[in-house]
Length: 123
Image 1: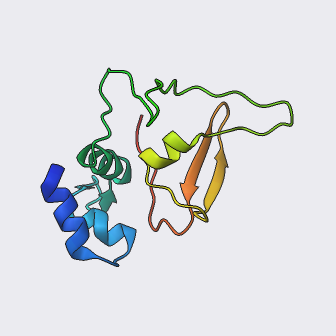
Image 2: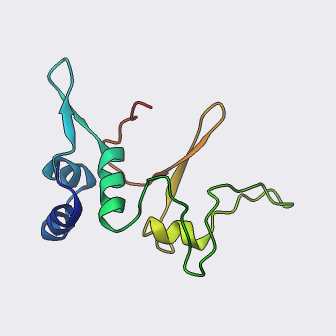
Image 3: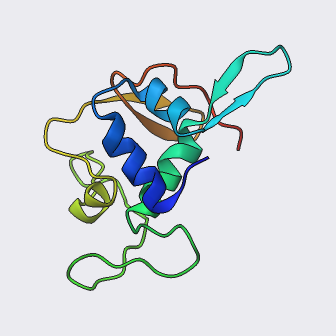
């Protein structure tokens, strides 16, 4: 599995390929007991964010203004749930990016539209 500058270089080299092919080419796959491939999207995206300087370690995160990111939010008076600019910037999200909303029993997941072959990661 590629990491750091090698991962960034490979992603740039591959250019406009499907997300599945990108994950596979960077080595983020495992073989299931039945012999089929399992693409590890979460591990790939975490490594990509890490390579871009986003640390998942224990230290507090800060936005551009120096405020610490809390990684908490609350439902606003009008029912909206806000995700701030610092968080979308960390994930390199752009205006117009679209997501499917997946509801669990006590969780909300946002899955990018067009993410091919996304499988659930074990947690």
